[in-house]
Length: 272
Length: 244
Image (cartoon, rainbow over all chains, first blue to last red; front, top):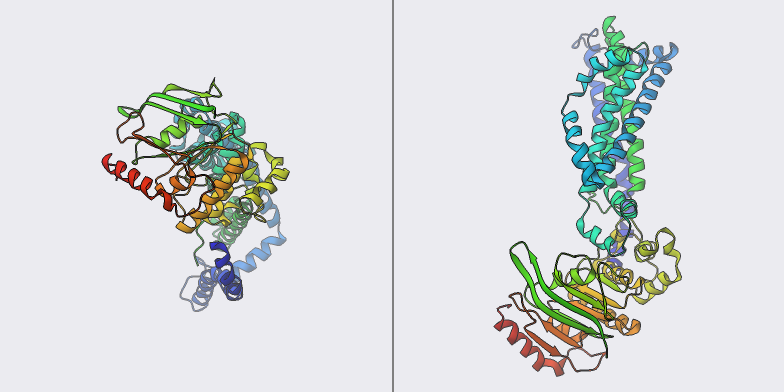
């Protein structure tokens, strides 16, 4: 059939595709490398004041120096906070989102409240959390959890609600129980939207971690940021920012890998 | 032949719009009946009702003389599109009714052979052509061993050559499994090729506008030269009904 005729040119294609793949991965590095080079040259030529924007080489030296003085502890503290906060918030969001997506009564009961809570700028929670939970770990984890909760909740609830009715009709021919319909059809069909929610939630979790640590912390990348500002060390601030970028990108890449694995069945657009 | 399925619909409406009214239709054991008529004349609604997917109508359905409500294992439905579950392989789709372990059921391999998808058990739906996907959908519909197969314009979305192959496949599996078939179609040649009886629904909701018996024995050859007069008659009636 049509597939057989398509298969032949695809085999001949792999050679040229392999040649293209390497430059494409490298393409993503082009902008950062150019920016770093420009900054380095700019600082060395005296065009950019080094106390505001230290040269990339100096930032690298700062990171190396910090590594001797417990940088790993800061990175670990922040990462653990994000992991715990994100896991808690996302898990709760999956449970509540599924309930709202699967059940009209649960939707009528819960969704208006969550939509109202979602409208609150999340940083407005900070003073309240500090009042209620002190300045310990608890308010930080809760704030990160709140940040992760809403994107995941929206992804799960709307993902289930948007499942194609035609697929559900096909499934109804099997007289599935409601739990079986949810498990075997609705959840897999909603998985792409759920993953979009999880990835958005994860990036918000990193954002909220910084917010939480800027306010009150003695360890973590947010603490490094505020410490660098207080001591007028732009190199420390920038070092922390670089590390945040790397950690955020790394965790998102992991999530993306998981997504590509679990959603390999998607018949989606792949630009040439 | 005995009546297998007895359909009586007094009324089926969507809001103020009535699509089916005082419609009676009997399917005899082993019979292939085609349902033709203009778009929007209620053919698909009728199939939904018979399949048990739509309970919002006035009337009654009887299978073997016993009242029929909701989805029944003896009645399978094949849609216009394949509607395969995209996250399941072809084998998992076919054996969906058995759950996770079903894909290794020997019936799956046998059905794959029968519909001409040998070797594609572990393919994902996205890897199939339109015709292959509809073959998989037919295999899935047959897996539960229904006695009655309902098909809603099953071949309207594929190219002409694939359509002829699929029509041949349907005639073949219907004969082999002794199926009773109710086929909604827009294609008069398809109806003439496949069916024992053609029922034409009217543009206005009401009893069928016309019945035609297709007497040529199955399996049939193509083109149905002997049926040219019948085709003319059907086309004339469709024209009179303002369906074409």
